[in-house]
Structures are given as C-alpha cells and as structure tokens.
Length: 403
Ligand code: NAD
Ligand code: MG
Image (cartoon, rainbow, N blue to C red; front, side, top):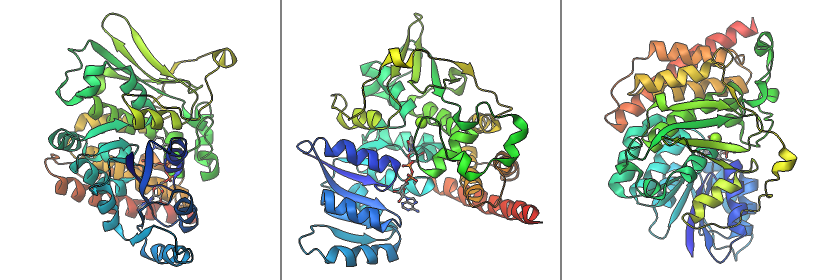
C-alpha cells in the first residue's frame, strides 16, 4: 500500500488526484492532505479519505477544521495549522509519494522537503522548477528522489522518452539518446484568435475560461497570456536537461497531443489522450506500471482533425519573456516567476489590465538585477525583491486605472 501526501488537496490537481486514488483503494492510501483556507472542502476530503493528517496553512482555518472534525470523534485525522505542517507531511517517514500540487512559489519549500526526503515526487507545481531548476534537479539527484512530472506536456514527454533516459535523466545526455527536439504543445488558450485591439479589455472572468482544460485561476490566467507555456518551456529544459534552442512551442488547439519528442532518425513520438489531468496523474502514480484513471477513451474519428501552428510572440509577449529569462539564466527565472505571480494576482483583483501583465514582468526583469543562482537564499532574496518591485508597479498601474 502506497502512502500518499497531497500538497494542495483542495485544488484542481488535488481533486483529480483524489479521484484517481479513490479508484484504487487497495493500492493507494491518503496519508496527509494540505490546503490553505478552504475548510469546507477539506472537511469533506477528511470525511471521505480519513487521512492521518490534515494541514491548513492558515491557522484560523485549521482551528475551524478542528472544531468541525471534533464533532465526529471517530475521525482519525489530526489537524495541523501553519506552514511548518506542510514540511512535516511532505517529509514524514511513513509517506512514500508526495503529490506537489500547491499553486505558486509557496509550493517550493514543501516540494523541496519531499525531494530531500527521497520521496517519489509527482510534480505539478511547475513554479518550483522555474524558480530553482538547476539546484532543484541537483537535489533530486543528490537525494535519489524519483521525480515524475504531472504537468500534462512534461508527462507526455516523459512517456515518449526511452526507458533508460526516464530512469536516470540526470546522468543522460539528450543528444546521445538521439533526441533532436522537444515539441511542446499548447492550445493557445482562450485568446488564440482574439483581435489584438481587444486584449486591453479582457476581464478576469474571460481569461479564466479555458476552452479545453478546467484548472485553478492562476494557471488559467497563465494559459491566457501563454506565460504557462513559457514556464513550461523552462520546466522542460530543467527536467529533461535540454537547451531552450531544442524546445519548440507548437500551437495545437484540440489539446489531444500533449507534447512530442523528435529523434535523429526522423521519428517523432507523441502522447495523445483526452485533455483530462487524471491521465498524467495516473501515469505518474503507477509508473512504470499503468492503472486506469477514469478518463474516457480517445475517439480519434470524433476528433477527426489535429491542427498545428506556430505561436505568435507579438500576441503572447510572455513567451519571449520566459525564453529570454532562461537564456539569461541565474535568478532571472525566479524574478520572472515572482513578477508573474504578482501581476496575475493584481489582474484577478482588477488592479491592472490584462495587457499590463507582460509589461509589469518586463519592467521587473529590467529593474531587478539577476544573480548567479548558486544558493537557495540568493534565489529567495531575488524572488522577494522582484515581488516588492512588481507590487509597487502594480499599485502605480491600479492608481492610473482608477483615475
Ligand atoms: P488551484 O488553485 O486549483 O489549487 C491550489 C492549491 O494550492 C489549493 O489546494 C490551495 O489550498 C493550495 N494553496 C494555495 N495557496 C496556498 C498557500 N499560501 N499555502 C498553502 N497552500 C496553498 O491550482 P491548480 O490548478 O490545482 O494548480 C496547482 C499547481 O499545479 C500549479 O502549480 C499549476 O501550475 C500546476 N498545474 C495545474 C494543472 C491543472 O490542470 N490545474 C495542470 C498542470 C499543472
Ligand atoms: Mg501543462
């Protein structure tokens, strides 16, 4: 029986993970779940899955959950409040697998704790790799953690790589394995065809309505700006030890192919399936075996057509910002990520316009000097400076908007 901790259990990935786990009760058991403030959802998760621990990062929410669970004395769940609890359940001796599904940079430290405790880490929190990819992968190798990507594109690439590469990616040289390109696919989000002069008026409600995927608000806005694909480009470079020059972004509006790997003999391997995160989650849970996920079988006759186009950096300036940050190296990617988190938050709170998001990130990247990312403290320091700067910028934009 695999004991599992789900970091971010109340979110979109958390919910899909619980769904897959519940289909295999003899193989997987939920040991701990975590959330920030969603007490109601956490209560229902605790009632259904009876975990040993439930962590609420927000201490008031933890108190509320405690009171509600005390009403059912048979509950085996111990409630912990505060950030420290995240680290404890991510590294607990009895845990085999950690699903890292907290959104944003707050997911970094608990994900790192799981890596340092040599867990099987199912990585959805792409922000950890964007912030400290080089150091993160070194920690994975040093602690012999098993890192399996859950992000659908990266899980697709993982499935298209040969078994020896997958088993030991850190020792592998992609060129030696005959890999010439990674083709990272993306739907183009809700604004693939929106006239450019309408971008200014995009509302949060429109931006979070994705044509193919149902996801949390932050990644939905990232998909609309295509910063999500930019973050995924960086994620792919670190995960698969490949240079950005060898990663092409391909728009594929049907979201049936989840990414591809091209080899020097002319072969291009693709992983296909309906757009449902339960497929990569099930793959990552069971690898190297396979388990059912509850996802409808793919009906290619009904899909009938697969389209591909190039991604336009004018329409989606965040793509270039992300690629340039990778090229620049060091803490640039942490600065990009921090500025993006602030900008998306400000946009969702209606403080800035949709088109201000890339401007804010660009300004931050220009103003905050990047450093060599030799140490976590340096990265966290630049992350903080980028947040302070972009928050001030966002206040400035929001005052301008309210005038
Ligand atoms: P979500 O917003 O639906 O859920 C986020 C989870 O993180 C919630 O459980 C929430 O309680 C927790 N959380 C938020 N702030 C927190 C804080 N300050 N402290 C502790 N916990 C906190 O997000 P999501 O869509 O499930 O995405 C989660 C991660 O997975 C993101 O990094 C995202 O990029 C990645 N991802 C998501 C999808 C998807 O389909 N949703 C696909 C690929 C990758
Ligand atoms: Mg993805």
